[in-house]
Image 1 (tube, rainbow, N blue to C red):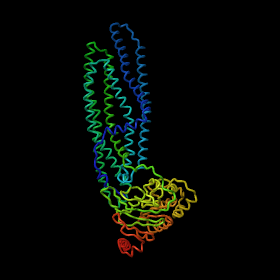
Image 2 (cartoon, one colour):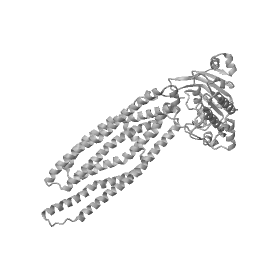
Image 3 (tube, rainbow, N blue to C red):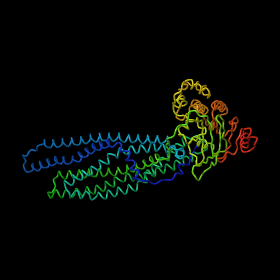
Image 4 (cartoon, helix red, strand yellow):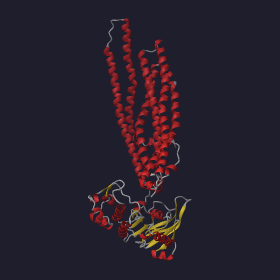
Length: 602
């Protein structure tokens, strides 16, 4: 069982990667939805224009009331025409109501776009998982992958919903409000704009400084999820080896790192608005003082000053919004980096090759095969093996000898560095990987079952006739115990298959192999985790399963491979001995020592 308890502790902290490149790549996902985005932006822009016009229209009502008040002072009999005021207020109400409705429609359109982008990302991730190179899967903790699929994609989705329209609205609001402010008074506009460069400098500095903490937070969250997943899925092992303190210590370290990165990123995020708001308020005070002086000098009306003050308030709002958007974009880019990093992971090359013939004999040959995970670490050198059709071949040897690696090479999970592998005299590289793997049936040490009924787990959702299904389950010794269950083959298996014993789960996987009826079998430690009685049943089932099929049996229990037609003894990537059980015992070599050590220990 792969158990990387200290993986998260070994992982290095990474700084932010290419911000601009990641942002451009994220924008590329928006391009297919440009019509919807354009329509949403159009509605939002219209709403923004109406909102910008609102203070100017409202200023008319203020001027009417102020002029009426002045006229009343000069002529006490003057009667204010309130209908003019009501008419202006009605227009203002319609303007703001229309703006609210258009904003609502715009948000619906953008939400649909972001949901489709999220669907696209998750679909690509799902497809990527099915094409990943086995080496890539081995290197990535499950919890970290799940964090990228869920947390990071959710961050992108939520951020796009907030930032996609808000950025356009903020920019347009700034431009529109600026134009209206200049129309009212260029002097007051100049005073208001003095604070703008200071705000922009502050925002850019904070964005540059804070991006690394958002990246660290996303990465550490993935590491923490990976650690939690590993600890829970291997809870029995952790408890048996008293690893609780280590697990808690690792969790505390990662959690403290996450807390530190979150505090720093959130502090920077929360610092943005107050700083920008403080700078904006300084400009606001200056405008109020100078505006009052201009009004006393008769250069501005009261309504104009009121409108300008409203514009100042509205001008600070999109500035604050832009500051908030920059924070959101930082979080989005940090999450996008992790998602794109996974999407860029090494995968198996696409092949346009013919399929292996359906009817094969099962002859296998390894010829001068070299293999290593890198050119500097070649541990299988000049490996040769020739297996005749229908043979039962056992592969034994110490841990790390290369037993499972040979099977992975045969199924092209890994490619050889040198040499060739043949099936029925034809190189496996001539055929597609999918067709090669479809000729194998596997029963592994870890009996993988998914959430569903027992029948679905045996058929793997393929369609089989009832007689074939019954024949497979009977031969696999699984039919008897399933008939004792209340729902029989319709019995649901829970998520971790804990409602079945280890032996029952293994028999179900053997029934799956029976039903698939493949010509070549791989049995990898299929009886290593069951009791003696269950092992006997599994051995009987496997003997029937291997009948007239080329079979590879990887085993540590040498008692399970005594009847094999050929036993290959491996050590350090080489076949050091081969022959039948009796022949190898007579040689009194490596196999003899292995067998005697097990026999004596028993």
